[in-house]
Image (tube, rainbow, N blue to C red; front, side, top):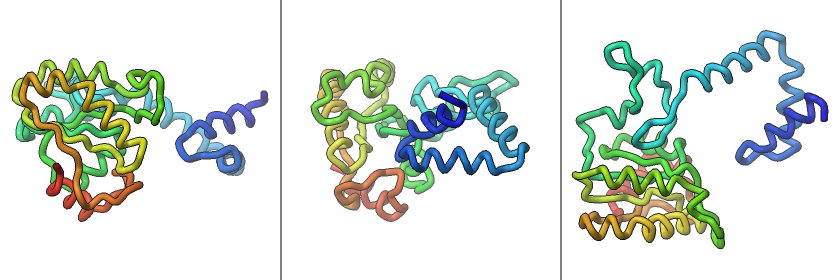
Length: 208
């Protein structure tokens, strides 16, 4: 396999990208000036060196711009923000979902990024999302009163929410934590990443 085919294979693994689009990406890069390829290569290296996962919410963030007293912090700006309401936690599937909700500005609680979804009929669902990390996170949260299942409004998202709710039920029942889901405002098939501000606002207000 030559370098072109290898790169096509890599691009084909990206979400929503097929072999034909991947091939177009590669040939587009080949038509660019050498500086473009060098810049892309450097940005990929910087991504690996500058971005880490938050110790609490599991989101990716640029740690070099989020430090205190010259030391790198293991927590992102949201988890480090003492003004956030730590009694409410929203579970989202991906970092992109978190960013979309944050842009809306309506939610003032904390987050946890599951890192994926649980397909229907999945035999090993615990391997598809960060369920063990979530359990540890919940066990050390003392002020938690509500958990919002901020999953996509589609069959796979609903299945993910059902699995998570069942898995954390012993903790939520023991600590009397309410579990709610985003309500009216999100139509079937909606992905949170693409929901507009007004839709997200209504979904938060009408959660149940």
